[in-house]
Length: 267
Ligand code: NAP
Image (cartoon, rainbow, N blue to C red):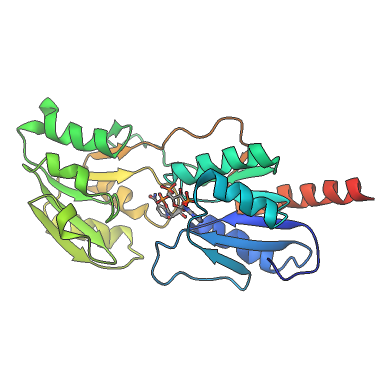
């Protein structure tokens, strides 16, 4: 249970830079008692001075119980745009427990006139396009695969291509397509270093999720500069009817409005 004596309690589902920014604002707001929840995938996460819990809730039922037993007044879903299961669970649990829910999600990247993007609805479809589409089936590519070290296995169905995979921690060897080069490196990366990397490895195709944000955008700028096409994995379909904002500042305004309304109801 958060230690503050106030009774407006907020749960932030995190794992993103937006969640961290919101937590920095909430650290300065003692009238709101906040708990940050992390899935536990990052080995050494940056932790705020707020209450933090780590690990899954045990599905929708576990989350609903957690919201009730901790007297949560509002939930901010600031998980990654591709963390669709957690967002779905939050929507269902908040519906059941009548907890106000706000989605905090950075805008997606937009294709620019000099970009050449192809689209896939999900990882599986991206891998299937690389394996079977007339464009790529018989034309081996040198692919910069930036989907994340836990999301490589689907690409085993397209072994005719070479894959450059960069990650902080080494991927599981069993998940790798046969023709892969692993580069262990940690960002930030700028457009010049991304362009040099793509040139050094003779990259002919970039595969990326449409994560949005500035941290990993330089790879797209480099692809634009070098006229390298991009196979873009579009975001999962968002839960309908959930109010959504793009910045921590807007989330703070929403929280403060809910806090004021809840105070008025109690007076
Ligand atoms: P996911 O597929 O939507 O969620 C899988 C399960 O992980 C959930 O059912 C939940 O377990 C648990 N979980 C996820 N986020 C949680 C949180 N903030 N607090 C507590 N439990 C959480 O999620 P994912 O794609 O594996 O992402 C996991 C975490 O990494 C998220 O916090 C996300 O923001 C972050 N992240 C994801 C990506 C990405 O590309 N997917 C990229 C960067 C960061 P229970 O059902 O047991 O509650």
